[in-house]
Length: 201
Image 1 (spheres, rainbow, N blue to C red):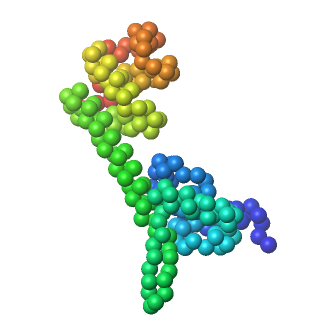
Image 2 (cartoon, rainbow, N blue to C red):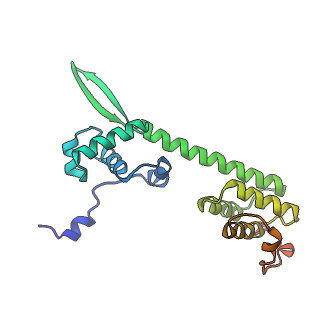
């Protein structure tokens, strides 16, 4: 018999990295994820007994999870008739469509925020500036907070992302952007004397 650790190390199932990156947006449970993983890797058929043997969900859990995914519109059942025989299979098109839609929504929002910065700065953003804005978005900083920090920077005549990053950090730490004058006293950097962040010559 194989060593148990070696069994656990085996890579039987695979999943696309784009799915991993975006699947959290669907707010699915672990059971739902496991069932989707089965449909992607094994077969797109609802066979509760076989699924129980493969991924460890009880038959009742398999059926409940299947119904939950169906109600959420993440999967559907496709009925086909061939040579007089009717077969039912699981269709994952809605699952992929939802992931694509979420990704496109995120992309549209990102383009919008980039445009706001470029309009305010009156120039194109540098690669490092794009990376900084991406980091804020990845860290779940709201666009409202980012735009408010940008507005504050423009009002103060400090159009660089180091200053904006400091504002966002302080506001996030304090839980709001109130009493901004008090926050400015915490700065130990001459923001007004600093140029744009790592602008390319």
